[in-house]
Image (tube, rainbow, N blue to C red):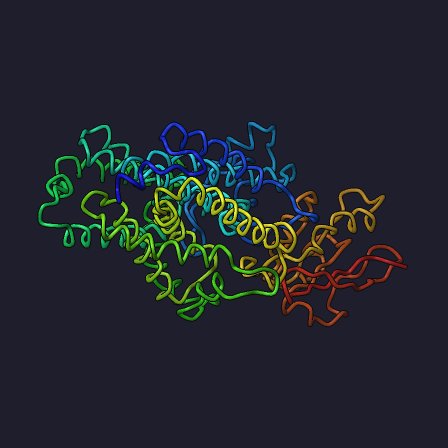
Length: 510
């Protein structure tokens, strides 16, 4: 089984050299898919707008301040800042959506270039099949093209696995320190690293307990503490430097510890609580736009691949470890009430690496005929789903990947404001209410924009030229609002902010 699957080609590609060529080619395709716009521009998601505002603060030279209540770690921001600066961007107002989305797209495409490094621990042919899912599957494309932390987290997770595996195979201090740095980066990316490490520990224990008696798995190297202390120290130093903004915010590391405790409350839902089977519902149930090819093919191939990994666990313990890791992560995320569809990427990545074992185990004599047909069929199915969910209906409420999407109305807002405010120098905009994101992104070119929970007292703020009423502020008595400029009256119109969440926009008119 092992020798056959490791030598079987994927459409004629079976060697490690060919696997690298395939990975580079698919990485280019992945980058194009993640940055390629659909028929209509995809409006910025609320989380993207918040991250863009924080990035804008860094570009403006403001010191980094970590908020443990409702923010992720700073790695995304610190990685994006030099990238957008290299593009000549130095203010929040100058940012474009593609500037923000370039970093996650590069990280998502770069993930593919780490996959060949898993050979020969996994068969080259199996990794070739895994690359197809990682390149074309709708969840990886959709979330690899928005400015959130997931793509960087996946890239760092796989890099940490590779560094740890290399160290265990031949322990050296530099390799241990590299693993420590990567762990520190993960700690400073998202608090969900705790779940990743818990699932990794579970998978490691089960691999050790289920290894065959004759297996020469290096148990001693796993438990040897020789380099453990320096690796842990460098990981804490790395995370501490990042959370402190490289010394600008000394309380940042302590706030990061607080965040771990606050994450317990956040895990209960906080408005995002979903039932146990929510991920299965998002990824396996047929929706109004497309058949869930990613969910069906991955579920079937992962199940088969996990059984193959069990049978070959002595020769390929990494495959068995990945199968256990994916299952443990899926169970943990299912048990936690707080759920969003992009969190599934945490277990879809190891599941995709295991899934490649299934088609790679096709009968050797029939493989040259069946493999190209199966690869084309898989690619066509995945691309059909990706086209529907990423390109054609990216913010449709029927799209299971579009979680609380921003309204397409927002893309026309800058032009509407420009027409309404033509001839006004330095117009003043007021936004009333507390639930107004992602408006700050679309109002970023108007520096005299103020955000207030309610209309401010007379003369406490400049008179507005435009007013937005969000949430409960829509119920305010018109008489309590500031008067319109000049001889005009307020003309009310509606603007979609998010799905089923309109705001009232008041523009001056005769």
